[in-house]
Length: 336
Image 1: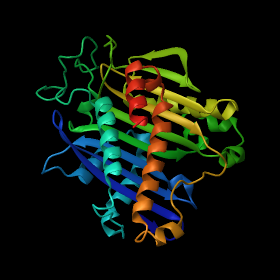
Image 2 (image 1 turned 180 degrees about the vertical axis):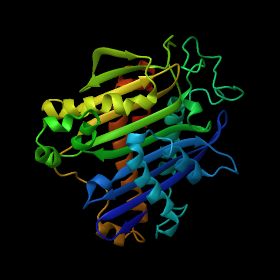
Image 3 (image 1 turned 135 degrees about the vertical axis):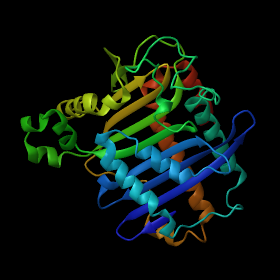
Image 4 (image 1 turned 120 degrees about the vertical axis):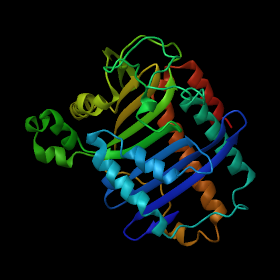
């Protein structure tokens, strides 16, 4: 972790875990908070199979470069911060600080997420031409069944990016800014955008749709409108303006979710309202100054913050609430 002048804060971890049946995997977490410019803040989580030759940072950067055009500006900010990591003055927690409880926590978390992100670790090995024999029906415009894992490197099982956006920038996509008072849009609190990409996620009951289908949910309630044959690259341009416009005009609405599903791979976008003043969960500078003496306490505090944040982010998603299997999986983890 690193505390920088001007109220900026970094927290970076790579936690490997060995599964008997899955091999070696690692979860990368990178939290960057800018208390003075909240719009620059972001959270990145990344999970993948690894080997001795894996370049984790390089693969992460490559994945961020694959995001669709309207997320490129955010991805560029994240890439810039990642590339500066080697120059940062981080505090490393020694092994004796990572106690049995912390190790158990990370193991349980990685086990839970690995089972969701990639139920079958061998699902995409041995297949060519972006075609999956396990998928029944559904072809992309090229004639092959769509596979989100053909967009991202095969070892990658999850990419999560959380950032902050304004209704103004996404309203411009459909020219909606002209309908609003620009000053009111600029003063409107930022919206929090969660982007969750799971290249190896699979439907419990495979469908025969083409490129995939999209379900929308408002305040956790599924809307009676399903978009068919949608490619994941269309989500931001086609549906994000709709989500931001809806939250801007409906004071009672707090969350707008867009869930893209296919027989193999899924993408989930969740737009949340925030308060006028985004409250940071990062430790204060005074805490950081005593980190050498209280590293164990600080690690436990950060661990609790991350667990609570993860729980809120996951349990609010419609894709989890709509699946008894996923609900039971996350409930069991939270009870650990």
